[in-house]
Length: 195
Image (cartoon, rainbow, N blue to C red; front, side, top):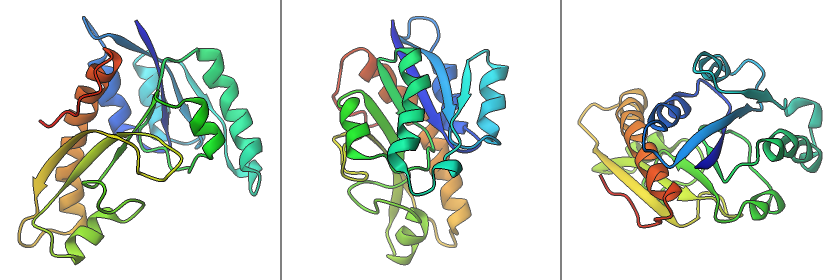
């Protein structure tokens, strides 16, 4: 059984989708939800599901990313994870941290990578006049949002869409895609999922 640590910064809706999927014959189980935000709503949601939580507030480490990551590693290593899942974790991790978990760290991104890495993905898709948007699960590498793609889901962009309406439709797909990719990845299968 693979041990999964999930890193969050906010409400944790993708974390909840992942944790709810890891039951029955699933090859993995959540062992820790970790946040850099003490007030992250996802922490209470994880506790309500009986999953251990931890917080490493990034603010005391302003300008000291190495110090922050050293503290972040303590609860992660104590949980002995096989897989790390970034689920709305809003801190960029250094190459040294990423390399430590090479081939074992996943992230979900709200665009059809390689289009629109980074922030403001829905606004950028709308501004470009794209016909579709979506989300991507990928392996984390030192280059931002550039690791091997493990799955994508697409949604049409509709006339009159706003950032909010598009984001809501993409998020619904994220909640389906990320659990599907994690199940396959935890079983040792890196073939991309395209629901």
